[in-house]
Length: 401
Ligand SMILES: [Zn+2]
Image (cartoon, protein in one colour):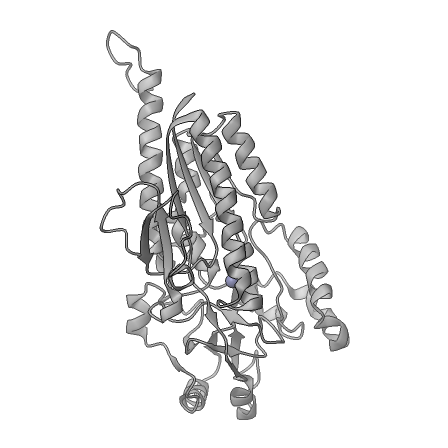
């Protein structure tokens, strides 16, 4: 039997509002806390949790950026001649995404989404490494760098594998007592919420499912470790999308040419613009002021939410939709989905949740990057223990080598 095991489980999109009024994890992790999320999508929320730092520090923010000189997608431009009946099909995009990911040796999450092949040579993709691996951040270290440095044996989920597979690998690692620390990542609830919305009866069923899995993990861990500490948390919430906005219908009539006058990435809830010629910024900004379903994010606000990039690398102007408004069509999808995240961090459905087995979460754990402080504390405990067990029991303490 080993001494202590720390289990961290991230359930993607298990937002504060979604678990309100539900008895989820009441027995296993009764200490529940509402956390503020980070401005952006999972592409920034997850790296913020794993590094304990903010987008303006780690530079893992939105996936696609305007950068024609460094675009790895130039060869895909040839596909622009294929009829849209083929290129806009999800199955075609899925196979091509897999092929491109292997060709370009991308280690993280990658999806071509709905970026038109006509313009794909204008863009670069910012998650070439996996934030779920050591040295996986765009800038600075993450928790896995610290686990490796401290030689703490750990489990981390492989998100390309099915959720149940990741559960079984974790259970095997606990039963063999191989690990002292676990980071589990389940993304199934996020996918379900996008499809069915946050008020579907399927959400409760999915949470029951997770509760059974977490019970299995805890039952097994308690047989093999004297103390087991559990933290379950999310990266953001999820808002139902009841309004569709065609933002292209506002920008296209301006007669500006993409890649010559301006560039834009239409995310699902944001539009990020780059201005390539004088006078274009004014035209686009004026057009955007006519759209009542969202607003331009002021620099001061982006700075406040730690998502301001002075070099404009992620966009020189960020337009954000109101909660519940979905940009369709966007570069993320041609068709509407039931629910989305990536709205303003203070919108009601944006808040994340932290469930803990022990009543010892410090007061200053208020935002999702602070979850990393809890993980750091766990690594430190195991490091001290490792050092204590390798230290000679009598005589002088060995000099550092
Ligand atoms: Zn999502």
